[in-house]
Image (cartoon, rainbow, N blue to C red; front, side, top):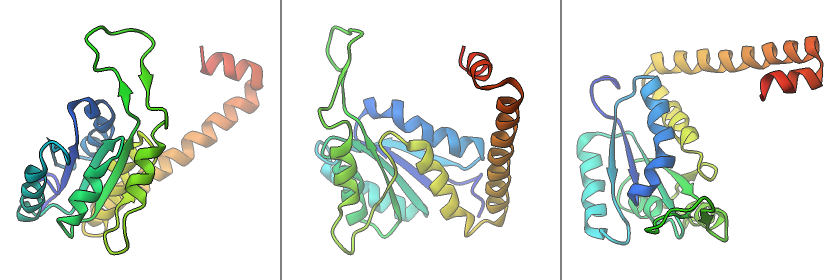
Length: 191
């Protein structure tokens, strides 16, 4: 079985508005040609669908589920309670942008996503969910890739290459900084 032919990662989110954040996980998986299946599953509005999705994920042979949710963020924990598949929770900062009239001063949760982070990370013993940082779905994609790399050695090689590129990029930027000086470097880099 190959990770490029059959989805081994499920990406779920509680609402369509979460898709703006969750696309980061999909972009990472797409970059490394890891097939994934994406769905909206609300823990509160479609609780029976949530249970059905857990059974579907197991039947499909998913190795990892990435679940993003904001506010009380029950989706990652609830999906974890229905399956033995590892769940990576993405806490999403809730934005108040569903109003009919859009304005430039979009407001967000008074808790800044901390409510979601705590909800995901504080699962009871025996029902763990790993949590990435608030709105850090890209990290969830990389974490899913690390889990799959235990089964697929070619993914492990791609991860090693990725880390090497990151390392070399920092060295290159450091050389530019040294060469041009801090003031010119900042002007050039962040115009």
